Length: 306
Image (cartoon, rainbow, N blue to C red):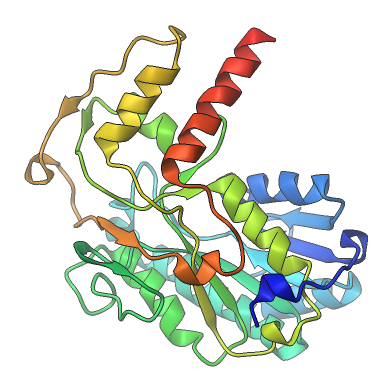
């Protein structure tokens, strides 16, 4: 029986959610869950040394935490090439510390959700499912960032952790620098590739759905992975075209310089692929990429009219 058919009707007020990481994802998830009246603690590593198992253990027990959502990790600024220069730090933040977090939650019987990446696949010969062995991971010609993401999945196979793979996260705020839309609106050079993307309101909706069901036996298993991406992905060119259609004169039409992958000046290879979200769609109904792009455009228009 599917999870959405067996949802427990619990009060969100009874659930204490600990979010680790105050970046783009942690902030968006925190705002959403607080609006739904969850009890939420969002802490950075300077506020809680969650790399130390004892410190994390004490906080969870002393604050009756029901679920930990780990949004922390190494992403790279301005891009994943930074991981090639900071491999030890990348490994610590993307493998060692997240593994300790997952192990602590597993030993305490606390629910654990890890926000990860689908950048462990590359190619268009198929839409990659959760069952597919990564072809852009530990043992491939991939970026060190992608290797670290695959490594975490490998070392937590025996732990009770939900891994949510996202790609190119998009939110309503097109001024936010980590928003995929903001990035491509400001890049002078773009490559027209087809890639899965994640609309953060849908990630939040998926999280709310599973958090409402924390008492279900569905949680009591070993590692469980979900591709949290939106169906019917658009190419980069299609996204730019929609931004130009919907802006109604609020910015100059975007006219990037289109280049090929071989012309892109990068240190590490890049992942380009489409993920299959059939498994996650059995739990939550996702918007298509075209649908959420129009939702974003409508939101911009409404705010401009106020």
